[in-house]
Image 1 (tube, rainbow, N blue to C red):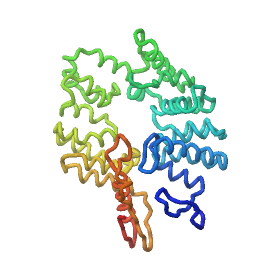
Image 2 (image 1 turned 180 degrees about the vertical axis):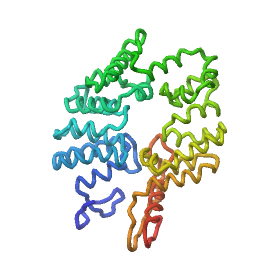
Image 3 (image 1 turned 60 degrees about the horizontal axis):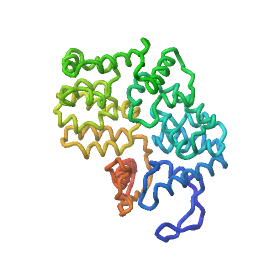
Image 4 (image 1 turned 90 degrees about the horizontal axis):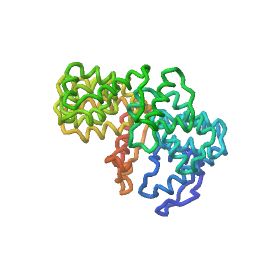
Length: 382
């Protein structure tokens, strides 16, 4: 982070302060920007406007830096919406290699729609070629049978069929061509939609959905876990499809096919349903596995949030292990280190409208992680 040698500005509270250069300012904003969220000192509109302005400024100054920064922001810093906005505004600012930058901002199959939705909201529905081609590249990488079943919900404003229709991605193989056609038909002609033979997961899901309600549990009792995996079933889908809701039996069928984040967020539900000891051990092993922690790309505070929200202590050791694994890339700090943690009123608000975790909790968590890596440390809350 670079600043001027002497105070050159004033803080919100009127104290003398240093101005940062645009790259430093953009970096610090990007890694904390949830997009469209108010903060203590800055409203959402003003914050989003400042973010876009900084992207334009740095794009004009050093587009190659931005080309490296956007994929880092999405894949290393794990900032989803901020990366999508940065990529879109990079194109709007006229940055070269826009197609590559757009594609690099997408890491999940529901994000191509997010890029298009942002552009349409901020800049209209005339999409430039770098946006369309970059989104199409991302679609080819991320649209699969499983992601179609998971993310192409009827309640979504931008369906996968809309994305395909807008960007015209070239399928990588014959099965993906069939998938694109299926998604377009599902969007526009659901009454006459036919599932191609190449889409086995989609076909198996359709078979399950056609079962009468009174027969569903009996079918799953025969080979529930395998059947749900074959159908690409998520626990959200199962909870709405299965009569009687998510009891221990239902959770135990779907747990083997649940992803890391889904397991982490459902620990309270597992306790409430009283799942078997064998399934508890399975969940504990998954959550504490170093490779799975790394692949999950969960923010460290997610483990703290899970610990705080579960009623039992049987997950405590597992969550502590997972948390330690998630911060193990913090470098060791030689010599004397002073770690300051802000716990003032401005840090008491939640990190987003959907979260109960407050800013000061995240600050304290990272302060403790830094202190654990330091040779000689003073940890101060102010």
